[in-house]
Image 1 (spheres, rainbow, N blue to C red):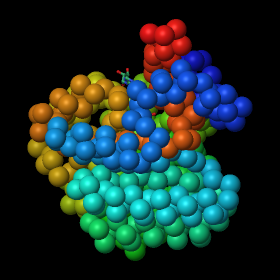
Image 2 (image 1 turned 90 degrees about the vertical axis):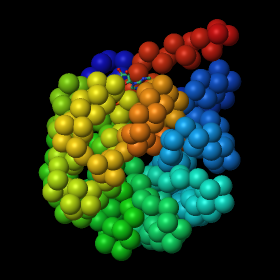
Image 3 (image 1 turned 180 degrees about the horizontal axis):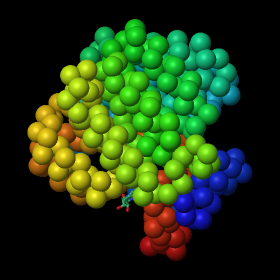
Length: 311
Ligand SMILES: Cc1cc2nc3c(=O)[nH]c(=O)nc-3n(C[C@H](O)[C@H](O)[C@H](O)COP(=O)(O)OP(=O)(O)OC[C@H]3O[C@@H](n4cnc5c(N)ncnc54)[C@H](O)[C@@H]3O)c2cc1C
C-alpha cells in the first residue's frame, strides 16, 4: 500500500480535519466532482439525468458511526422517505445503507429492526435489493449476521464484500446457497496485513477470482446477482471477456461505479448494452468518504489543488 494512500486513509478518521475541511470552500468545490450535492433532491436529480443514458442508480446518504439511537432512527426514517421519493420520480434507484448509520455500534438488535423496516418497505415497493455497505474489518462479522437475518425474512437485500480481506473467499462460498445479491469491491479502509492483502496486485487478482466464482453456473442457479463494483478498466475488460466467453446472461451481473468517476467508461458500458449502475452519494457528512476517494486515486488531489489556486 502506498504511503500516500496510508496517510489519506489515516486523515479520513480525524474529526479535527473533518471540521476544518468542511468549512473550506475550495474543498467543498472539489467534492462536487464526486457528489451532485448534499441534499437528497440533488441525488434524485442526478439519477434522473443518468436515466436516459440507460444508467440505473443507487442512492446513499453519507454518514457512519452514529452516536445516538435517535440519530439512527432519523436515518432509517430518511431512507423510508427516499423510497417514496424514488417511486414518485419514476426512477430505478436502489438504496445502500451503512450498518453503523443504522445504530450497529449502539444496539445491534435495534440496528437489525431498522434495516428490516427498510427492507420491508423496499420489498413492498418493488425497489430491491436494499444494499448493505461493508465498513472496516471489525464490522464484517456483525454485518454478515445482519445480512443473513434480513435475507431470511426479506429476499431483496444485498451485501458488499471486500476482495482485500483474506476471509472473503470463504464468506462468499457460505453466502452462495442463499442466492444473494453481492457487490464485490476491493475495500476502502486502512486494514492491517493480518486481515487484508497488503499488495494491490493480490487484491486485484482476488477481485477477479471472486467475480468469476459468483458468475459460475451453480451460483447463477442459486440466484446470485453480482455487482462488479470497480473503476479499474483492466479488471472491467478482463471480466467482460470472461462474461462473453462463458455466455453469462446480463441478468446475472451489473457493473457498479461511483458518481463522477470514469464517466466515459460508464457511458461506454451502457451504450454497449451492459447493465451499469452508478452509486450517488449525498449528505453533509462527506469528509471521511471523500478522503477514501482521494486515497484510491491520489492523482485526484490535483483537483483540490487546482481549485485551491482558482483553476
Ligand atoms: C458502487 C461501489 C460501491 C462501493 N461500496 C463499498 C463498500 O461498501 N465498502 C468498501 O469498503 N468499499 C466500497 N467501495 C469502494 C471500493 O472498495 C474501492 O475502494 C474503490 O472502488 C476503488 O477501487 P477501484 O477498483 O474502483 O479502483 P482502484 O484499484 O483504486 O484503481 C484502479 C483504476 O481505476 C481507476 N480509478 C479508481 N478510482 C478512481 C478515481 N477516483 N478517479 C478516476 N479513476 C479512478 C483508475 O484508472 C485506477 O488506475 C465501493 C465502490 C463502488 C464503485
